[in-house]
Amino acid sequence: MKPLVFVRSLLMVTLLFMCSLLTGCSSKVEINERAFVSSIYVDKAEKPGEVELTISVPLPNRMAGENTGGGGGGGRPYAVFTKTGTSLTEAAEKLQTDLTRKLSWGHARVVVFGREYAKAGVGDTIEWLFREPLFHINSYIFVAPGKAKDITSLTPVAETTPGEVLREFANQRNLLQTQIRDVLMAEADNQGFVVSLLNMQNEKMISENNENMNWVGLQGAAMFKNMKMVGELDLDEARVIAWTRNNLKTASITIENKKEKASVSLYAIKSDLKAHMSQGKPVFSIHLSAKGQLRSIYPPHKAEEVRRIQQIEKQLESHVNDLVLSALHKAQAHEADILMSGYRLEWKYPHVWDKLRPHWAQHFKEDIQFRVISDISIQYFGSEFRT
Image (tube, rainbow, N blue to C red; front, side, top):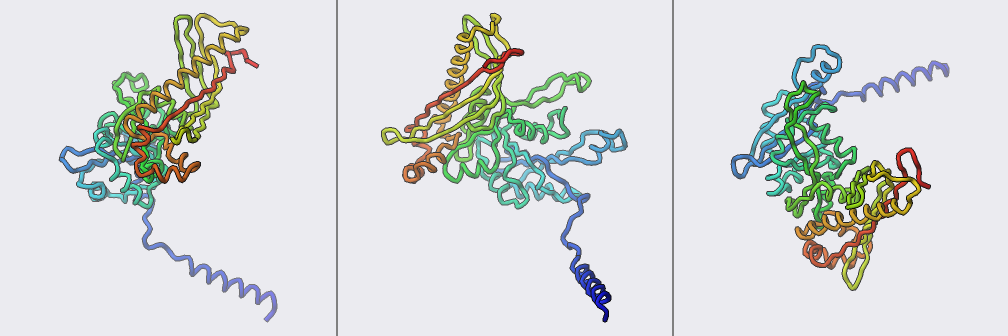
């Protein structure tokens, strides 16, 4: 056989062999036969001992109709379904039974707990989601002011679905970015965690033909201990805790006294939490830093008045320190280690952590001290720049 003919024959046999390996997947589910869950809402059901599960599913055909003006039908570009059951597994099974498409949990990025459900405990939901192989543990968590299901009625003006609105709250780093994995880490070592707390208002919206619509925003944070919501922080306290956890990207602070009123926008926000021992007890030092842009000041300010700017910086630093300590004192009163400071202690003093870990919540409340040091430098004054 000629060399060229042999090579061609060998190549043909190889190709045929490779084609024989390209078998189909008998267990596949086509995309157009799936319902992709984008957000999950969990509440206590009216019947004692039952849980209410609500899911939001986008409707691609209606999304296309909105963007192109074509025939996608009217109405919202998403659907909301609710079922109750003695467990989340049962409620999810009921949802699947009544749907014509196979539920897919892999696209869910938001989980919202109703207030009453959060107070009773969210452990069963966290366990259920953790055991779902397709669910992402980096999904964001929120707590609703009332029932979680009511959040689905918000008007997603700038986004497509309610879940996208909530996801962008976290992605924009406007407040906290608590995820499922944070909860799992906190629970593993008997520590607490903190979650953004939503609010809901019914407002007349110009973009919606001046109709009254539901608008959802952020009002603070919910503190958790042993998977149960035990307390709340107001918006200012939640914002500095987000700063301390390196969740915050920008912030604006206004200070006022008898002589003046000044507003400053902060950027380049950083935080560093360190543990050390003092007189046999753990002490945590929190170092916060940021640069600022002066937005307004009254009475009017002259650029050469450096001393006045230094005074404003000191007032800002004192204000931030007070807010952090106020938030942490609330957390200690509820035995909720919302900064997960126990991990810092474990990293630096593992032998101390081994001793304190079994009763960490009690030690966190009674024995732990926090020291806060803030460094805020105002750099910009509108069109003027400070060197």
